[in-house]
Length: 153
Image (cartoon, rainbow, N blue to C red; front, side, top):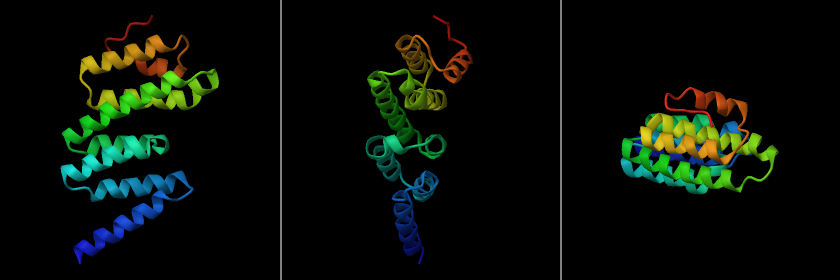
């Protein structure tokens, strides 16, 4: 009976992820994380989120993953997320994109690294953000100033 319930929950999660509504897709991902019990399942979710569903992720899903996954899966997730975010930020060409998706990716880097990264990784991420844009969005500037080793350029 329990196995059938898990299978039904997995099907429900997959249906929600196909929804046109972001909040339903988020709920589907939260269900998948609630059902994950082994490191292999968490590793599969890390791959899925960073490779297949990256552009559709939202902060709540990322935060839930970082707080719930085993350390090895979280570390893999953080490394992949930071690399993907940096690639996206480098590809941004207009001010509109900097304040739209660019700002989202900058927050993701800081969320991931401040949750799990060591000081060296965080310093590297902050240096990347500082050096990449002359005018960072104000919310990013405020977050950067909160780190003890931040020095304005």
